[in-house]
Amino acid sequence: MHEKDIKRIVKEQLKKKHPNWKRLARKQKKQFAREVTDAVIAEYSSYDQELDVPIESLIGIEEQQRDRKIIPLQDMADFVDNFYQRRGMIDFTKHRKLWPEIHNKELQFIDTLLDDRILNSLLSYEGYSPQMRDIFPCQLFRAELMKAIKYPEISYRKYCTEEYMGRERKENRRFLGLPLHTKNMINHTNLCHFRKSLSFTQQVNVLIYILHFFHRSGLLQGNVIHGVDSTEIACDSKTSLYVVEVGDRKVRIYNDIDCDCGPRRNKRDKSEFVIGYRLHALTAINPATGDSFPLISLLGPANHHDSLFLRPLIQLAQAMGIEMKLITADKAYNDKDGSILADTGVHLITPASKSTGLPDDVEPGTLAVTCDDFCEIPMVRLGLTEDGHEYKCNAAPGMCSRSRRCKQARIIAYDNGHFQRIPVDNHLAKQAIDIRKNIERPFNLLKNREGLDNARVRSQQALIARSTFAMIATLLSARPGT
Image (tube, rainbow, N blue to C red; front, side):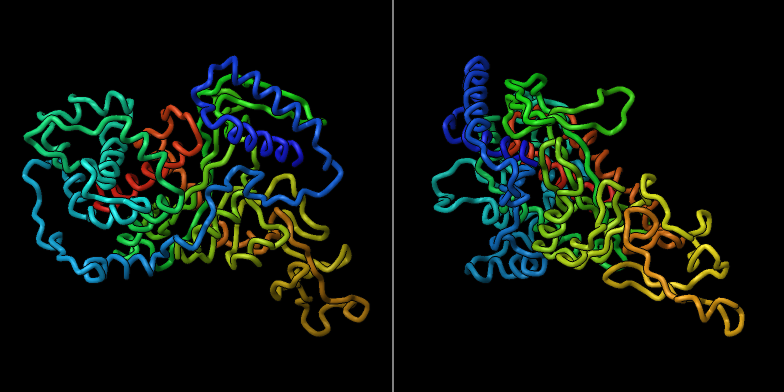
């Protein structure tokens, strides 16, 4: 972890000393990256000490943490219901009719669902004055949604032209709230500044605003299983500015300071490694229908192990008011030490790791547990203890000749195999593991339909905003059933 701490210090110093990093020439970036990295390594003196640094800082998500300004789902419903009453305003949205210019059914639904005044309240900054603005935050938000839904494959510069926002595009202009009789448009600079100005808390709150409609409709209630998975998102940085070895590891500095190089999932048409980020998302799965909905995500450099993001992701979801009991995930996520269950109260179930062998005296096919090598009668599980699964002898009186010499009890320690905290030796556990494959559908929609896979990534902050808008677009597209 020390090389990650060095990368963290280098990243902080480069951002502090060179706030205009993006505008520097590549030759200058190489020089500054070499100077700062060498200086940090020369002064680094804690190789033999335990790191006293929050894990969120080491894995690059220090700006994506929960805070008190996040509005939970229950409070968001109250905020929406009493928004106009508290401000002494009249709610004209209750009697708003469909615009005749909007023919797209999906855009019609989204237009009637969104309240522009509430969006302005959630997306505005301190000191915001609507009287002095020509373009409002709600219009910029709608522009991001429309691009993710209708035009994910094109660039922002092409999107913000007359071809898509001109006077002939009456449907688009009406959805964006632009006047039909003028040539005023939203340019790509407006959208760029909008994404940069949004804090992570604001993005989470507007996502909760959308999720509260799902919560009221009952789609996120009942017997819902939650799943966690990740996917890689490559960035434009193909070669590193500076690479230096620290022990048996390497510290790499790229044009995008926050990204890093990590292993890619097995894909035949792509390289073994990816330079960029990994998107870790929490998804709600309806076991009855198989429908899955993305709820929240964290974005970190691609070189960090998936399991490091599980606890922050769960804690962020709980701060949003999302109730979770069981999470299904792949074997990259695990809770062998029980810390996630103790800290969050959420159970985790994953496929049995092939590298984890069976304990002694456990039948490979049936997973039947016996007391020792000489016992032939399967034991019965009593439950869980702090040390592992507790078993007792299941022999009837007089059935076992060794009953007086045998302990008749056994504890099997928790592992990443079949003896997790939720054992995977029954059909219900296997169903929970198999249903995790439904998580792949939201990822496919986010990357292919909403264009997240082809995003020209320039910074982590911009990609966080893009991923949030893509998740909202996916949710709104699923809400009307289109």
